[in-house]
Image 1: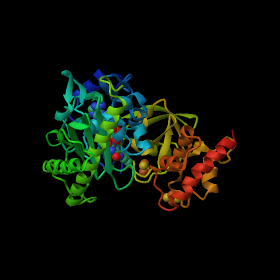
Image 2 (image 1 turned 135 degrees about the vertical axis):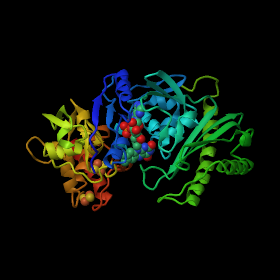
Image 3 (image 1 turned 45 degrees about the vertical axis):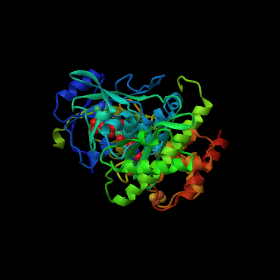
Length: 302
Length: 164
Ligand SMILES: Cc1cc2nc3c(=O)[nH]c(=O)nc-3n(C[C@H](O)[C@H](O)[C@H](O)COP(=O)(O)OP(=O)(O)OC[C@H]3O[C@@H](n4cnc5c(N)ncnc54)[C@H](O)[C@@H]3O)c2cc1C
Ligand code: FES
Ligand code: FES
C-alpha cells in the first residue's frame, strides 16, 4: 500500500521543527523513516504533517568523551557502529547496535529515532535503560533531559510530548572494573529478536560488586532487573556462583510477564529469557574480570 | 484528495542525470524511480523494508528506496541498477558476475543484490566468505538460493580487480 496524503515540512533548524509540530495536533518527526515509512505505507499511521529533520545541520554528531557517548538525532546507526571512540567509551552500545536490522537499514535509521520509537523488541531503548542514560528533547517550553527510566511508558510509547523533538541521546561511559555483554535470539539474522538480554557487571577483587540485567522483547516495555543483592561478593566462575546466578535469574523472572505472539509462546520466551540471562550475566562477569586484569588502574576506560 | 495535494520541487540526480521533478510528499523513492522516471529496474517486493529488492544507492550508500520519500532527497545522488552498466552499455562487473555464477533465476531480487554488492565491494574489495555473506544478508531471494549469489560477490570482486 501507499501512504495517505500528508503535509510535509523540511525544517532547517530545531526551532523551525518545533514550531511546525506545535502548529499541528498530530504532526510527526521524520528522521531515518525506517520505522515510520512502513507504518505510513501500511496505513497504521496517518499523520497530517511530517516534519523532516534530515536537513538540520549539526545534528549528526557522534561524540565520545570521558562522560560517555553523545549521539545527535541524525546520527545513523551505521555511523555510531563505525565510531571506534564510542565503542571504547561504552562498548555495550556497539554490541547491541550490531543486532539492529541489516546494514542497509542501519545506513538510514537513526539511533535516537529508535529510542523515541520505543519498540519493546528494539535493542537501543533497552541499552539506554540498562546504562541509565538519557534523552534531551526540545519543545515550545524549552529543552529538558528525560532520564531513560521515565522515557518508556508503554508499547511504542515514549514520554515525549507531540511537539517535542529529541535532539541528543547520552549513554554513560563504562566505569572501570566493569564488564558488559549482550545476546539475542532472532528467527533470522537481522530480524527483531524473540528475546534479547544485556548485562552490566562490576567486580572488585574477582567478585561481583554490582550487577544488572535488562530484557527486551519479553515485556511490552524494556525491563531492567537489579541483581546486586543476590550476586554481591560472588565469583560467577565457580560452581557455587553459577547456582547463585540461577537463583538470581529466577528471581528476576518474577518481575517479567513474557507475552506470546505468532513467533514464540509464553513458555518459549520465558525459556529464552532464562537461558540468555544466565549466559549474558556470566559473560559480563568474565568481561569485567578481564578488563580489571588488563586495566587495573583507577581512571577512565577511554 | 490527490488533485489538491501539495506538490514539491525536487532535484534528483539519478545515475548521473539530473531530473527536476514536482512530486507529492508521499511519493516513495521506489515509485518515483519506476513511475516518474520509468526506471523499472528497481523492483518493489514487500514495500516495508524487509526484502531488499528495491535497494538503491543514495550518495553511495545502499538504502531501501521503499523507505524514503523522494522529496526528502533534494540535491542527492541516486544510483539504480541501470547505473551499474558500463558507459558502452555492456554489463558492469557485478552484473557480469551474477550472470556468470548463475546468481539469478526469476531476477526479481537481483537489482537489490547488485546495488548492495556494488557498494559493499567499495568497502571490502576482497571480502572473505563470511564478509560476502554478511554483505548480502539483508536481501531475500526466493528462487536461486544464496550459494551462487555469494559466489557472484567473489567473482565480482575478481572482475573489479582485473578491470583496474
Ligand atoms: C527491515 C527492518 C528491520 C529492522 N530491524 C530492527 C531491529 O532488529 N532492531 C531495531 O531496534 N530496529 C530495527 N528496525 C528499525 C530501525 O532501527 C529504525 O531505524 C528505528 O526504529 C527508527 O529510527 P528512524 O530514524 O528510522 O526513525 P523514523 O522511522 O523516522 O521515526 C520513528 C518514530 O520516532 C519518531 N522520531 C524519530 N526521530 C525523532 C526525533 N528526533 N524527535 C522526535 N521524534 C522522533 C518519529 O516521529 C516516529 O514516530 C528495522 C527496520 C526495518 C525496516
Ligand atoms: S520493496 Fe523495499 S525492501 Fe522490499
Ligand atoms: S532470482 Fe527470483 S527471487 Fe531471486
